[in-house]
Image 1 (cartoon, rainbow, N blue to C red):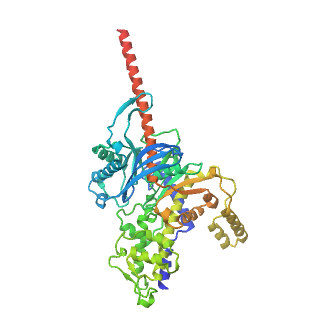
Image 2: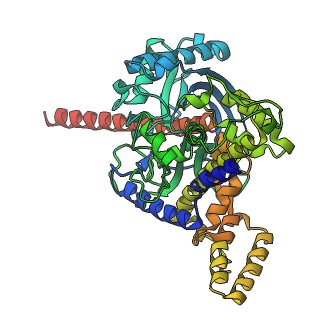
Image 3: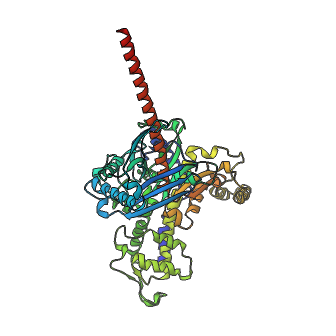
Length: 566
C-alpha cells in the first residue's frame, strides 16, 4: 500500500490541469508575438526565407542530408509530381567524440565523407561524370551545372538564418557541444568540406527538421487545404508554421519572394518559457535541469522530448527508492513477490547512471495492460536492470511513467493550440454555430449547482462529439513526426484533450484540426526546399544575365554617341 500511495503522490506532481493548459497557451502566443517583433526573445521565431508550401505537383531528383540527433542520414529523393516520391537512403551514427569535437571541421568533414560514400553507392554515374557547363540562351537558367545535385541540409539546431542556404549556428542542443562552430554558417562549413572532396553537390537550402516536416506533409497531405504547422515530438521538439509576412516586423536581411505574402517561421519552441512563468517545475524537472549540459534553457523541450522523459522517470524512481518507507524494487523475502523470488537491482543498473534510462520504457509501460504486467516487467529487467520486479513495482513504474508522458502530450497540445490561435486559421470558413462548453466549464456549473445549464451543456458536448462531418475547406492540417507522437499509445488523444480545454478552440475547433504523420519529413521536405532554392537560383541567374545584357547595350550605345560626337 505504501508503494502504491507514493506512486500516486509522485504522479500527481506531474498533473497539468486545464487551467494550466490555458495559461500555457496564452504565454506561448505572447512569446510568439515577441519573437516576430525582435530578436533575443525566449522563442527565436526564425524566418526561414521559404515563402510557400508545396501542393504535391512538384517534380525532380534532389539530395537531402539530415543532422538531427545521434544519426546522420543521406538520401536522394525523386519527386514524382503526384504527391508521391521515391527515396533511397543510408544512415550512420555520429561518433560521440565528434559531437563534442574540438573544431567544426572534424564533424563536417565526417558528414561530407558520408555524402561521398552515398554517391558512390547509389549515383556513381553522376559522381564519375565530368562537370560540363554550357550556355542555354533559350532558357532562363543561363549557365547551368548539368550534373550538380542540389542538396537540402536539414540541420535541427538553432540557427540565425539569413538566406535560404545561409545560417549561423546560435547554439548546440541534443548533446552536441562544439563551441568552434557557434556563430558560423553551417551551410558553408559543409560546402567547404564537400568542395575539398570535389563532389558534384551544392548545398542549396538550409532546412530545420520541423520545416521539412511541414513541407513534406503539405506535399503528401490528402486534403484541399495547405498545411499550417509541422511539429516534431521525438528526441527533441520544435515547430514551424506558415506566418503572414506582415506579422514579421523584425528586420529580414536575405532575399525572398514577397509575392506570396507568407513565410515559414521556425519557432524554436524548445526554449519557450525559459523563465518558468507558467511551465510546471517539479523537483525532478529541477534536478534534470541542474545536471544538464545547458541549465536554464530549453525548458519546454526538457518536459516534452524523448531525450529527457526517460531521465525524468529515472530521477523520480530513484527519489522513491531512497525513501525507507517505500518498498520500490525491494522485498523483505520471496513470499512478498509473486515471482517467488526477491527483487535485485543490478550494480550496473541504468537507474544509477544519468541519461541511461531509455524513454521507450514509457511507451512499453503505457501499452502493457496484460494480467501481471509481464511485458513491462521484462523491460524493467532489460532497460532498468532490475530482476524479479514485483507486480507492485511494475504498477508503480506504470503510474509514474504515464503521468510524465501525459504531461508531455498535453504540453504538446498546448503548443499546437497556440499556433492555431495565433494564425487565426480556425476563423477562416468557420460556421457560426456556438461551440459547446468545455468539460472544465461543465464541472464548474455542477459545483455552482447550475444543474440545468450543466445538463444542457453535457447534451451539446455529446452531440458535438458524435458530430457531423467537418467540411474539407474548414480543416486545419498539421504535420507531425517523431517517436513519441508515432509510437506512444494515445499521445495524440492527450494532445487533443488539451486543445479542447482552450476556449478559442473547444470541442468544435479541435474536430477541425487534422493531425497526420509526415513520414521522411527531413528527407522529402529538405528536397522540396532545395527545389524552391533551385528555382530562386534560376530566377536570379536570369535577372543577372538580363542586367548584364542591358548594361552591355547601354555601354555600346554610349560608345556610339561618343563616336558620333567626334
